[in-house]
Image (cartoon, rainbow over all chains, first blue to last red):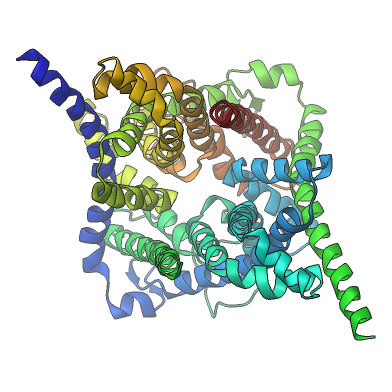
Length: 281
Length: 296
C-alpha cells in the first residue's frame, strides 16, 4: 500500500511547486485584469490627467513610455547589433575579446538602479542633458545593450558557416557577406531579441527615477529635452506617493493593466516571430 | 576601381564593429569609475570604518550618520527570505518540467514562466501593496503589512523565472545514460531524480540559485514599494526594512549635487554593485563548471 502511495505523494510535491508558480502568475494577471478592466475607457487612454490625478486619463504617460522606448531602441539596437557582429564574425579568441564578453556578462547583472545613477552622472549632469526624455532613453539604452548583444550574437551563431563561405566564394567582401547573407538570415532571431529587450525596457522604473520621469507635466509633452511621464513611474507614484491613495486605486489598476498589456503584447509579438520562423525551417 | 571602394567599405565597417565592441568595455568601465570616484570622495569626508560598522543610516539628521549596516542587513534579510521561498519552488518546478511534464504541459509551462519573467517589477510591487500587504496585515494585526516578509515574497516571484530556467537547463543537460543506469539497478523515477539527476546537476542548480540571488539583491521597485522603508535595524521578517536599492531610489531624487549625502549614495551603490557582482560571478563560475563537466 505504502509503496504504491509514495510515488504519488512525491509526484504531488513537484506538482505543488509548479502549481504554486502558476498560481503566482494567475493571481498577478487575473487581479490586474479584473480590477483594471473597469477603469479602462477610451477617455482613460486618450485624455490627460485631471483634478490632481484623481480623474482623467494617462495619455501623457503612454506617449512618454513610447517615446523613451523609441530612443532606447535607436541607441541600443544599432550599437548592440554592431557589437554582436564584431564578436561573432570578426573577433578572434584574444584577451580583448574575452574582456568584451566579460563586460557584457557583467553589464547584464548590474542592478537597474545603478544604471539610473550612471545615467544621472553621465547624461543628466556630465553631458548636461538635464532630466529629460533623451537622458532617460539613453539610460535605458545602456541597460538594454547587453541583452541586445547577447540575443543578436545567439542569432548570428545559428547561421551556418557554409553560408558565409558561399558568399565569400563568389567574391563578396566580408562586410558584404554579413550585410547580404548573414544578417537577413539571422533577422527573425535578432528581431525577437530586440522586441523582448524593449518590452523589458518599457517596464523599467528604477533607471528613469532620476533621469527625467515626472509625476505630472503640464502643457504639451514630446520634447526630447523635457521631463516626461511614463507608465511604470505613473503606477509607482499613484500607488505610493499620491495624497489620496485609496481614491486613485482604480486609476492605478487601470495604469497597471495598460502597462501589463503593452509588455505582454510585445512578448506575444516576439513569440509570433519565433513561431513563424520555426515553421519556415 | 569599384573593388577598391568595396574594400574600403569593408575595412571601414570592420573598424566600426570593432569600436562598438570596445565601447562596451567603456560602459562597464564608466560605471565602475563613477562608483569608485564618488566613493573615494565620500571616504574623504567620512571614515570607511564608520561607514562599514555604523549601525545607523540617518544622513539628514543634525549629526548625520552614514552606517551601512542596517541597509546591508535589510537587503540580506529580504534576499534570504526570497530564496527560502523561491529555491525549493524553483527547483521543484524545474524538476517537474524536465522530468515529469508531458510535451503539451511543457508547451504551456515554459511560456508561462517567460510571461512571469516579463511582468514589470513595478506591477509586482503594486500587487505587494494591494494583495500581499493586506494579507500579511490580517495575519499579524499590523496596519499595512509592508515589511520584510512582503518584500521577500515579491522578490521570490521576481527570482523564480531565473531560477527555474537555469535549473531546468541544468537538469536537462544530465546525460540520459545516468538515469538509465539508475533505472537499471532498480531505482524508481523519484529515487533517480533525488539521488542521481539532481546531484549531477548540482553545479547548474547552484548557479541558478546564485543568479537568483543576484537578481533579488539588485531589485529596486518591488522592495521600494512593499517593505515599508523604515531605515532602522531590522529584527525580523515582520519589521519594516529599507534595502540598499530602496535607499538610493528614495534619497537620490532629493539630495543636492555633490554633498556628502550625494557621495554616500554612490558609496552604498558601490557596495550593492560588489554584492551583485559577487553573486553573478559565482553563478557564472558554476555555469561554466557545469558545462565543462558534462561535455567532458
